[in-house]
Length: 237
Picture (cartoon, rainbow, N blue to C red):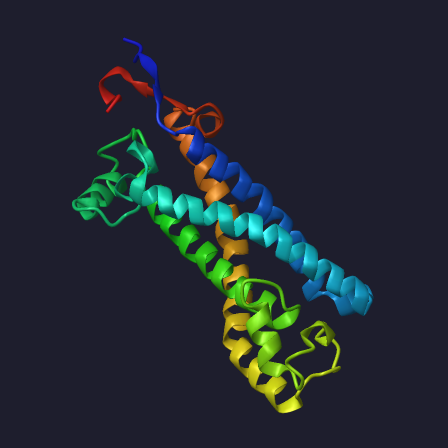
């Protein structure tokens, strides 16, 4: 007898919007970030590098706002917007993971256990990128939310902060600048290593989605477009 599948609504519009805005902004940030990291090799001028960093920051703002909205939804949202439906920290997850690894359960309305682990890892790394990126934006090109503070911290004349410009030593106290760069260094290091880890995990995530789609045939991919997965009659909850 052929198993009957039914369309079951899983992913809300909020989740789908977050997902695709995140995909677009992360893709742009990766492309721009790679160019910035290789700017010397590519022969990018100082003005060109500042422009690239400025675009990177503005895209980063969209990325950060989108991520903060998603984090908030995890606490106040509905159904599969909430963290207890999405992350691998709820009671009984260990047993769920064991059953999944043994192939005892084939269909999941939300993420399967492996998917929950991947979501947790990606959100953790994206959060690191957000926090460290905002600090770097403040110490590198003096953009909000921390740019004003760092500009004041290195200015010799604090009444002329407009003179503080990226890659310029005008109105800059050298010792204060060195102290700022020392403070910035661990954030920059974390940003870069988190970036490389994301470059590893993102293709792994895509592979996992494709593998799950082929194995379960529950419309995993299209569900993130229209919100509906196709599940067996007895797996609607």
